Amino acid sequence: RAKSAGGNRFELADPEADARAITRHGLTTALPAALERGEFFIEYQPLVHLGDGSVRGAEALVRWLHPQHGVLGPDRFIPLAEHTGLIVPLGRWVLEQSVRQAGQWCERAGGAGPLRVNVNLSPCQLTHPGLVQDTVDILERAGVRPEALCLEVTESALIGADDDLLKPLRRLAEMGVDIALDDFGTGYSNLANLRRLPVSVLKLDRSFTQGMQQFPADPVDLKIVEGIVSLAHSLDLAVTVEGVETGAQAEQLRILGCDTAQGWYYARPGPPDRLHELALVDATG
Ligand code: C2E
Ligand code: MG
Ligand code: MG
Ligand code: MG
Image (cartoon, rainbow, N blue to C red; front, side, top):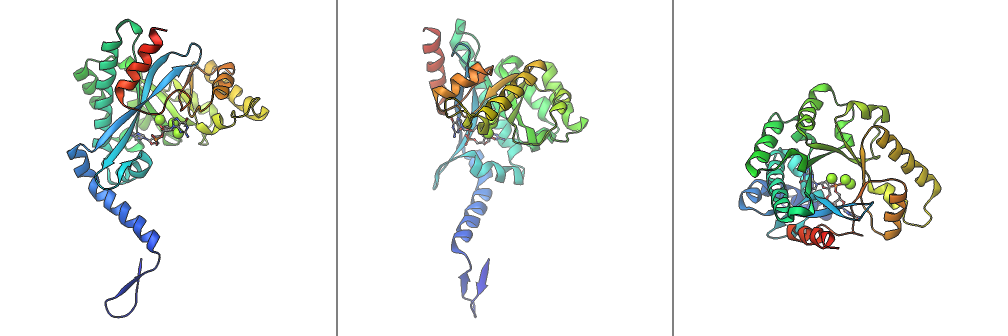
């Protein structure tokens, strides 16, 4: 937005908003070349079994090493990539890298047990006709079993989903890929609706974990999480909790029956080899 101040001089109405708009625009147009030049990279954050503390796998989280702006988090560019459709090739790249990474972890872990990888899917990827075949091809090329992959879809992406939208997810689930409902509890989905969805994991949003910061936690928060966990388990769904930052949170969530946890208390997202070290340390005591 610029106001003409007579002649051909322009005065910025709101310089800050304008700078943001330029950055948005600049980032959006830079996305395709960034993918070609290999400016994206993936960090992995461990998923830890709450019962025995072992590392079971990791969530893949994409970052952009921008030549001018440094490392940008996904919240800065995923919405832009969704808007332009670049999320489809970018998401496919993330999936391919992550699945290959999981293959390497499994190979190197040997007897320490398989390490699985969780990959986030955007709504645009869900409606893209190539999703199932791309996933099959990627798993095959990497020689990775479908059971080592979990695709995370947000609750809001599946609200009101009709059968056409659920079909590819059903196919993937039948193949053995796990489907997780990400950021669960932030949307408004009908709990009974869960039965229709081909999901096997609920990822409880960080906002619930935040309620467990004090010990003892807020009794209402405890009741809500307890209710969600028991409902999930009665539907045969595993419960993963996000955003665990303290030991007190981990302990309370474990007592409430949550299965897996993820958060800074265990590890921040990091390079792939770090996960391997964490899992190995873990396997050797
Ligand atoms: P998400 O899938 O819910 O991922 C969890 C986010 O919480 C990550 O943020 C992670 O770094 C952060 N986190 C983990 N532990 C803690 C903790 O203990 N405390 C706090 N405060 N935060 C924690 P990140 O990496 O910035 O990613 C943000 C979102 O971007 C993700 O949320 C996901 O929705 C999206 N995203 C990331 N990678 C991809 C991708 O490859 N494709 C798509 N479509 N979306 C992605
Ligand atoms: Mg996620
Ligand atoms: Mg999440
Ligand atoms: Mg989240």
